[in-house]
Length: 225
Image 1 (tube, rainbow, N blue to C red):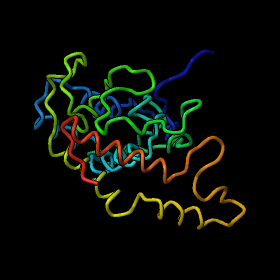
Image 2: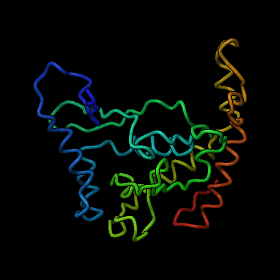
Image 3: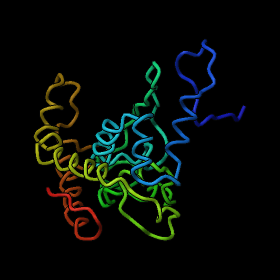
Image 4: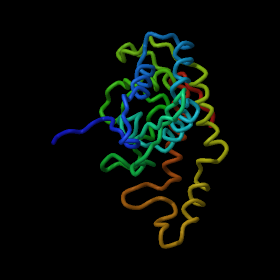
């Protein structure tokens, strides 16, 4: 019927709901009039910010272009029950990452900044206030977000998560190969990640790290890898 809801209830469908938790969450996220400290106080009431920042750190390093940040989709919002419900982001559909995702390319998303001020699939400015308040450093006047105050504590936490994932070996070629080799041999495919037009994981990670190091000199981030 040509009906495609951006958000649709997935659980508790038989219960009467006004979607109050969802609407409250959206209203807090998109509020641009609040100062950084005011917004920080409000967003922590409706979102588990720590897990969100962890997720964004991983999504950036894995180069997933088809998610909330880069293409505005492929995630669920789970709200806890109780008097003070909080939202958790549940991501899914990571089938195009690690350099894949754009026809004919093996290095997709390796050159984009950790601040990712644009939705990379179509080049429009990222309008989701979560990313501007938490991840971004750009003050480009063309964005419409240049006057929004950022939460520096969140940005530093995001940066530190990226550094820890790489420097502590959580995301590394060795970790990747050990993970692949943990499966029965008939399910492993190519242990180095190549095949079906993809580059190796080692090459993807090398491109990503080189981009991070270069990016450190071109904007407000100084991710040390």
